[in-house]
Amino acid sequence: MPHFDLVIIGTGSGNSIPGPEFEHLNIAIVEDGLFGGTCLNVGCIPTKMFVHPAELADAARHGRALGVDAQLNAVDWPGIRDRIFGRIDAIEDGGRAYREGPECPNITVFAGRGRFTGHKALHIDMHHGGTAAVTGERFVLAAGSHAVVPQLAGLPTGAELAMSNTVHTSDTIMRLEELPASIVILGGGYIAAEFAHVFSSFGVHVTQLARGKRLLKSQDDEVSAQFTKEAAARYTVLLETTVTGVKQSADGVVLEVTGPEGPGKVAADVLLIATGRKPNGAHLDVEKTGVVLDDQGRVVVDEYQQTGVDGIYALGDISSKFQLKHVANHEAKVVKHNLANPDTPISSDHRFVPAAVFTDPQIASVGLTEAHAQKAGIPYVVKVQAYADIAAGWAREDSGHFLKVLADPSTGLLLGAHVIGPEAATVIQPLIQAMHFGQTAKEVARGQYWIHPALSELVENALLGLPEPR
Image (cartoon, rainbow, N blue to C red; front, side):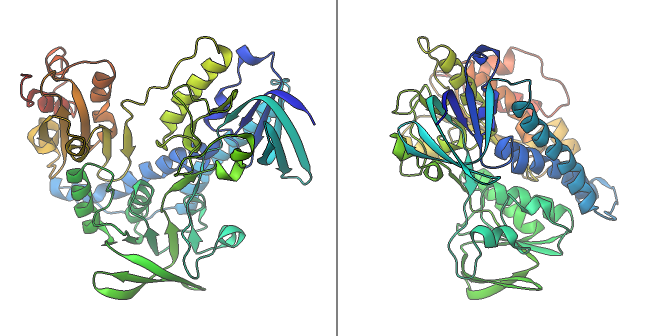
């Protein structure tokens, strides 16, 4: 059984750890899926590569209020898909070849599914057949998460789901052979929202089913309510609705549902299951090496990304409540430093983690929502700034979109920010910076130029609208 100085499980952000400072180590990399992890292959990169052409396809809808009469003539789905994955698959192939090649002589790649069998001992079922067994002095658990598939009568799972032409998760929906005429999307979160935007923009009849009273319910309440209103105006949204059964046929899929109006049926060519993702810790049998999982299935780590077992670290979706690539990248940098400098470890900074939803309208958030502040008894002041009340929003005839900022009434330090509207993920960045560097609202608003007439004036005016600290 070969023994390694370092074993890394997962090639998303975990693949960024091996570098010149570790050339003296004998390193094993274990990957059960595609090289590069979720973000590159089935997550943020390909989805945003679909979102951009979706925005172009949907532009005609926004032009009507501005006097532009345009129409969408056609969508070349195979062309879009092949352009996207022609680039992504080449990166996946190149990343694997690099780690397996002569440029990385100290690294051994194991393509297969690993499971712990004992203390720092890993059994690997190799993809090409056969097995391998390795031990390691130190481990990095970076194996990510997987799409959740609910247990529903008639819903395929496992190998049957992987072979289905009509039922998909986010792992497979982007590789459809052709654009369907209709799709039903199960879920009310960000994955469901982004795919509903993409398919609706491409002319597909979209039906979205959610158990809650609003879509994107983890967002600020006003943001969630505005998005739900706009989504329902674009495509069919069925709220407070549960699925009781699924039937597949040659013509597509039929869902048996129960909603506010009682039982019913929803039919479509394709079903997308977008009900969240779950960490892969249990798939690795991490308990057998002494690593603890919490009640959400996440690997438990301290502020240094170390588990309760000396020498075993974890990062990204497998251990973090923030299923975000920029968080995994940050944590990978922390783990890399702590592996190289165990006597002077650094800790992860999860104070102000931003996130965005790339729908239309776009959404971005950081820090506390009003509901969280109220529940925790945290004092705050708030300002809601409408896009329509700045020059760039006025020029767009924008309606209903806004930036909400929360600040500490005593210090003027920002507590949270929530945007729904054009370029929200970019608009919010000065506020993220202010929170990280301890800048007050008034310092940010008054201490610099703001380009006129740019969308960034939304931030300036919102901050100026907050009450002076008392």
